[in-house]
Length: 176
Image 1 (cartoon, rainbow, N blue to C red):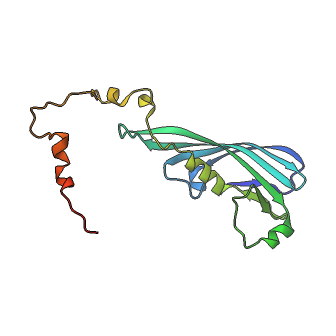
Image 2: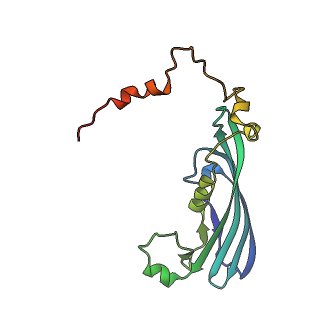
């Protein structure tokens, strides 16, 4: 669990610096390994708390081109706002909707648990297209030493002309 202590915190800006093992971040994707680094600040003004954090983790990814494993640092910005209001928490105790801009917490809370938020931010920051650094600036034809504009030998009988290839599908009759 990633907990930030808030009990007895005075108004003003406070630094947040944490390095935690990835095993303490419940719900994070299995691609992550090593430690999670959390740096930023917590600003308290009255009953309002504003967290502005930079979250970093190392992910082991499989290259889409070469299927080689490589490691990449994944980082994300996280901005969370909280309001300490015990009465409002009691009124909305059955609501678990944390998608709002301001999350309401009890004035008696000693910690803010940001485990889920960190896991979600890092997980959605994983690249969709996973390409190892050595292949990022290259064209796919360069990587595989293959000319994409090769001409197909027309004397090869295994290759059918475009017309013949679809002929069998055109003959299919559907019942309505």
